[in-house]
Length: 135
Image (cartoon, rainbow, N blue to C red):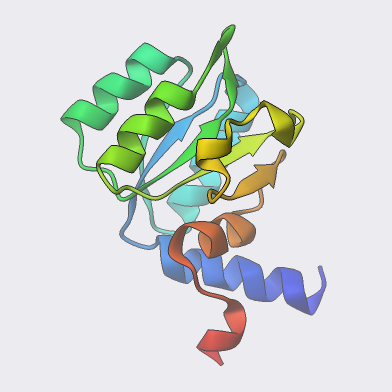
């Protein structure tokens, strides 16, 4: 692992510690891997959930600091969840293998991370800090 990757991994651990992070992902193994990485970084994972309705229920009923959203879920797009998170001023990123052109232009300011997800890049996108700020 290169120095940049190590810096990003350390940043993820620092930035995710104590945060409540919603995972919306319909691929079980990817959701579970992300959950384990977040918990290792000290985050409390909300979910993971695999559908829009379940995700909206959690947004409504749980305290959430940030979210990682798969774009395409069980035949639906995650955009109603993104709209609700934005309305509540909760930061989120899209994590997808899809072509970014499927994301509506109203979300152009939101980060897009390719799968499989790297927590360091997600931490940068969600919390707006880079490893250089920690040295």
